[in-house]
Image (cartoon, rainbow, N blue to C red; front, side, top):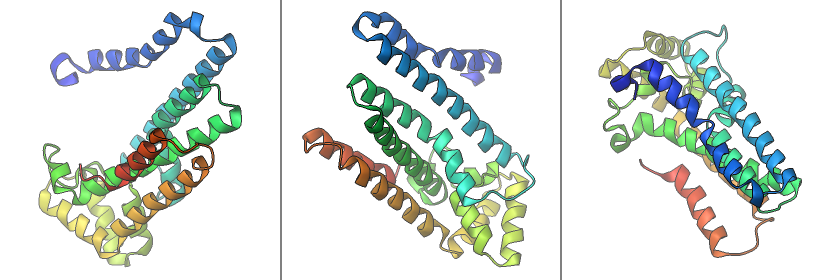
Length: 238
């Protein structure tokens, strides 16, 4: 949108989109109790704040606005806000509308959040090794160009030799579009098993989060489809 109409129009349009979901609730206020409506408003507002905070954190990191190297715990928390938020919000709002109690609402939201984080990790993995995924996005390693501190980068910096660590940091801080340099950075990341490590983290998040909702949801076709979807999100190739 910004390339056609300009940044000002794009920002204004995206801001308006945040409020469109609430129009659905307003138009159906006669079908939703006051208590449920209040809970939905609360969830929506809090999660929109979380989303903006997560995006701001990610931007600050790859712009080099922090004075320390990002830890794995900080990265996962950023993903909880940036990528887990929309999934968590949708799941919690659906659970509220279904009449679930607060404990179930929170557990369902946590499951969706974890799947969102696992989805982000898989997205970061595909940016480095997904040839098909990279088509139309400028090639492999666009996260390298942006200088992003992904889980793989964090793991590599934690385990690499001093020489490899400094070289990877140097390439990340260049924000280079040079394919040869991006490939060099990817090879350093591969060297320390960081992609395999990230895959295992995503898989663990899926397993642990499913174990909680598995106790809540009764056997059904919908539950089976949800399980398949959760698995697909961390194994997809595009």
